[in-house]
Picture 1 (cartoon, rainbow, N blue to C red):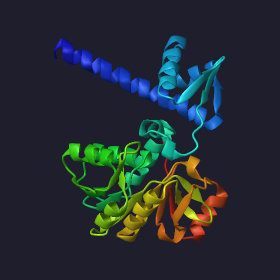
Picture 2 (picture 1 turned 90 degrees about the horizontal axis):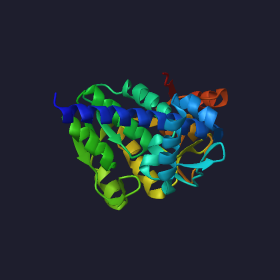
Picture 3 (picture 1 turned 180 degrees about the vertical axis):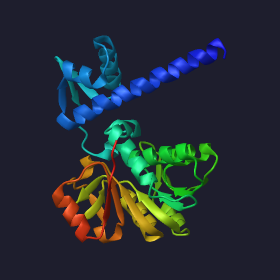
Length: 271
């Protein structure tokens, strides 16, 4: 191995470790909004100097705000206001666990619809790492690129109006194109889950895309981390009777009983 290759490998490992530390810090701040430097150092398992660099990097990306003696999470009114990088890092560990659990529900050779989102992107990374052949139609350009790069998937990119913050297509062109296909599974990410009104989004066009995917699929799998529960996003067009599976990392007894009565199978992801 050349010196350049060894250097590239070191940089790649360092970057991966930094991403892991960022995820731990953001998970901590998502749970309690603010944290002291001691708390952040404990979850990051890093030296004070490394923690200071990490906090500076996260602040530079607009994810956190450094305070006297600690840091706080930058509040976001809606997922429509967030960049994909920010959403991907929020609750990253839980999304990774959900991705592994959801992948177990998808047999080799299946046909999938996948909408855009940080949790569905985590699933596509898990599917790519497994390398089992699948047919995938998606409105998410980052999902399509990741799966196409793996070389074992047949990937259909659904056209439409592109939103830069999420790499997603939507609108009449997207829904009309989706209506030409059928799939075994619709794998759906969302912005919120409500006991009564079901699966919800912050954008009407995102909700319309998901609705068509569900209508044209045999089975629907919703993937959502526990922060989505009791979050009544702006638009709700997917009732619980249209959902077959919910894959999440944690659920209350009230939610579990409600979904059981609605006929929704809940899969809890674990470490």
